[in-house]
Image (cartoon, rainbow, N blue to C red; front, side):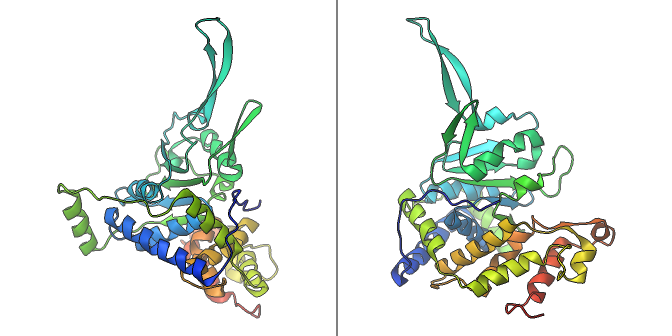
Length: 343
C-alpha cells in the first residue's frame, strides 16, 4: 500500500543550488524532447515529474499522438536502457518477466537451469497498449512495478535502477481490450492524457516528419544524476499543513467518509487509496523542486491532483446514468476542499 522508494545511494541535500540545478536540467530535457515531439508540453512535463519521483505513468490517448515516440526519446535523453513490450492477447507472463530453461553442456552432457531475463530487465519500459492483454498477463507487472523485482520459481531477481514503467492505452477502442484492474492501475503514479495538437503544431509535425531530417537527441542526464534528482525530491521539506490538505483531498473522494461532499456520495462508488495521498505529496515535492522552490506547497498538490486521482476514483451507476464525468467531480473537489481544513 506504500509508495516504496527505489534504493538510492546519493545523499543529495536540499539547497538553493541543488534545486536550481534540477530546474535547469528539466528545461534542458524539455528542450531535447521538443526536438522529437511537437507540442504536448504538459504531457512531457508530467512524464519528467514521474521520473523525478521514481514512479510509473499511464499515458492515455488516441493513436498518432506521439506516446511511443515520447518514451523512446525519453530513454535517449536520459541515457537509459530502453525496453518496449507490445501487449497482445496472446502475450504470456513469461514473455515479460523471463523464464527458466534447461541448458545442456555439450562436453559433459550435464544439464543446468538457466534464467533468460525478459524485456522488463531495463531502466525504462514502454508497455505499449497494456489493455490489449488479458488480466493474467497484466498481473505480471504488479510485482515488477511495486517491488522492482521478478520472482521465477523460488528465485527473485532485482531489476536495474532507476526503473520506470510507462504504459499506453487507447481510450476509443473497446473490442479486443481488457479493463486494467484497479489494483494495477493504482500502481501508476500519474494517469497522463494526451490531446490533439493545435493546427500550427500539426503543420509542424507534418513538415518535420515528411522530410529527410532526423532529430539528433543528446543525453542530458546520467543514471547517477537521475538517482540524485529522485533523492532530492524525496528530501524536499513539506509542512504538516500541506500533508493534511493532501489527505483531506483524498479522503473527500471516498463516499463512506462522513465529511464527503453530497455529490461524492451520490456519484462515486470507490474513492482513492492512501497511495494517492502519498503521490500527491511526492508530486508536490517534485513540482517545487523543478520550479525552484525550496518546499512543497498547496499549489503543488493541486497541480498534480488531476493526474493522481483520475484513475483512482470510480463512478457509480448514477454517474453513468446521468453522464457525470469523474474528471468533473475531481475538478469540483479541487475547488471545494479548503487548504485550511475549514468548510
